Each structure stands twice: as C-alpha cells, then as structure tokens.
Amino acid sequence: MNRIKLCIVGACGRLGRSIIQESVDDFEIVGAVEAPNSQNLGKSLTNLGLIDSDVQISSSDDLSSAILNADVTISATIPDSELVNAPIYVQNNQKIIIGTTGFSETQYSKLVSILDQKVPSIITSNFSIGMNFLYRISELVGLLPEEFEISINEKHHSQKIDSPSGTALSIAKIISESKGYEDLIFDRSKHGKRKKSELDVTSERIGGTPGIHEVSIAGQYEILRFEHIAFSRLAFTRGALSAARWLHNMSEPRIYSMQDVISRQ
Image 1 (cartoon, rainbow, N blue to C red):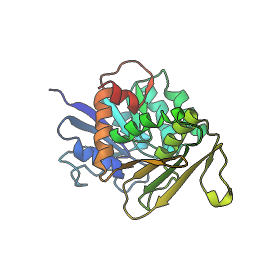
Image 2 (image 1 turned 120 degrees about the vertical axis):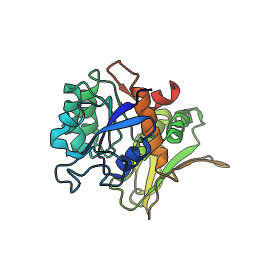
Image 3 (image 1 turned 90 degrees about the horizontal axis):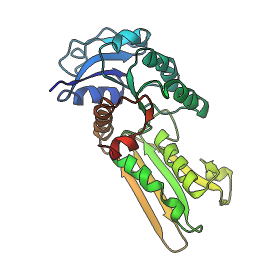
Image 4 (image 1 turned 45 degrees about the vertical axis):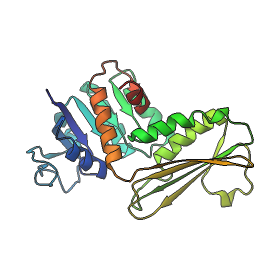
C-alpha cells in the first residue's frame, strides 16, 4: 500500500511533533516547515528525536519546495503565517488542512476567500472526533424552550496564547445561531445581570491541561452538561491524520470541515 505523503507546517510545535511521531504507519513525512527564525532549521527529524528520517526542517520562506512532493499538507501555526502561506498552497495545487486558531473575523474571511473553490482544504478549530460530535449536538439547542440558558467554559494549558479558545468560539457560534444569542460575554463582572441575548463564554489557563470544554444548559429546575476532555494530545493528532487520509481522496476544490470527515468516513 502506498503511504500518503505529508508535509507538516509548524513541525516543531506541540501538534506538529505529535503528528510526525504518529504518522509512521500509514504516512510518509516528505516535508517539515518552521518559521524563518526557528532554531531547528536544518535539523533532521532524527536529530530532533521525532522519527527516523533524514527530512530536515526547512524555512517557510521556501514553502513551495517543502510541499513539492506532498499529497497533503497539515498546518498549525499562527493566523498571520496562514494568510501568507495560503496563496502558496493554491499556486502549487496543494491539498491543505489548517488547524490554526486565533483568527480575527477579518483574517478568517480572507483565508476562506484565498482557498475556497481553489484547492481541496479543511479549516478547523479542533481535530478531535469527540469535539466535532459535540459541535453536532450543539446544533440542537434551538429545540429547547426559551427558558433554558446556556454557558460555555474552557480550560487549557497555561502556555496557550488565544483566549477564549478557537474551539469555544466555534461552539459559541453554533449555539448562537441555533438559539438566537447576539452577544458573547467573556467577563460577567463587567455586565451585571444576564440578558436573554447574551451567551457566557469563560476561560481558564492552568498547568498542562490539554483541553476541557463544557457546555451547560440550565432551566429553572434542571441542568444538563456536556463535557469534552482531551486527556491526551493524541485526540487531536489522530483526528488530524484521519482528516489527511480523508482529504487525500477528495478532488473537488472547496473548503471542507471535520464534520464532513466524520460523516463521510
């Protein structure tokens, strides 16, 4: 069986390293990319203790060469980098999976405009299969009586940059569209009594927590909680590799989601 050839952009990040290490059975890493100022440029994946491979970390300044032999590229970097790299994927007709979070609305819209109808791609805030099932459940909250109120809480490791998490904002968007919320409240102490148009989204940063998201749904006499706990980074890694395996078989140039990956496997 021919293994799917992958390029990993953000190869030395938490997710990038994990994807490389877990890819050995069904995939072949043919490219590994980091920022131009990375201390790991020129080091092989063997030198970095990831896998037995002579593939060297290359600069994003030479992205076209890094993705040249790849069937699919997986990228987890920062929003500004994704906007710089996206046209290069299009120019090279490269299938791309983007798992970066922290986009502003303007940045996200620009990214979509670059990729949509150009190359097969996936943009997601969370690779976890379980989380994407929670997304699907969240679509149903509009069926609840008006008296039921909803809140979202997320916890992550203390080094995570964006807050709230991209995943929490994705859940909030789904719930808002289904239930009719108009305003996201990140700090209740600044807003006083809750209004019907408001959805509370709170964040915590503590220790090495990989990721916890809780959706609470409360009426006057009962409460329902959905909690997703990623107790290993492998939850995201395996999801990312499943997405790569799935996108490899897609030919239509459009933006897909992890919902597509789950429902069409």
